[in-house]
Image 1: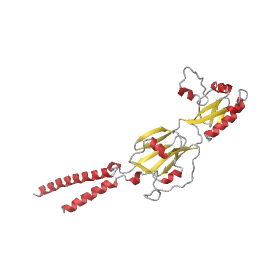
Image 2: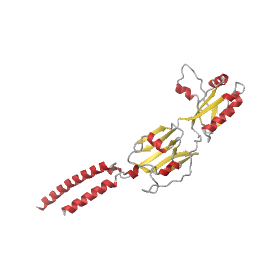
Image 3: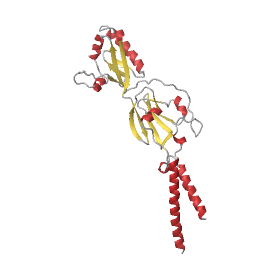
Length: 281
């Protein structure tokens, strides 16, 4: 009778420990679809250059080997939309100087650029804006110097994304043009052992509408899917696995918990049996 009870206790404790154990299939990335309920994703999308949106900030700098043209734009630096600033060499820091070349994409989809005025940039790539500005500036520069020697640099600044996961919440800078979901989470310090990688969501603003994209981060197929690249202002949300309060993260911990549980269970069982035997006397 006692042997049977010990077997029952041991079986229940082992099942409890392994039920909430995080295994490799729960956390490993780039798993082949079809196994362990890993979904397939269609190979239907290629990386596309980011199209500018309202609220983006552009760093725009005009360069020229013609001294007259260079002086012209040094005297007409502006920033943050329609606000204009006067550059002072004796007091401006590098950060402040960079702000003078930064322009906000306004609600109407334009930036207010010196000499040119309103320039439509929304839904254009930075390269398209560069070519557009070079074309429009040529008209104004002819009277000042060689407009053919002018080039324009256009870059997006203050590009950020956010991560919400078991390890916490934070905002992170996008430091390269093509940032993948793996790189984004690595920069955030991963998501933790108890994050559910099968239910990752990316919240993205598209043409004024909020879009929620849900996918399984473990699937190898996401490399060629629409979920692979992160865009500015994306929010990555990774929810927790169920059963965390009873969980363990590796085999060694599982064995230790099982051994401890069995010892404690045997101790409790012995006390209960003594109480029962004492009450019978």
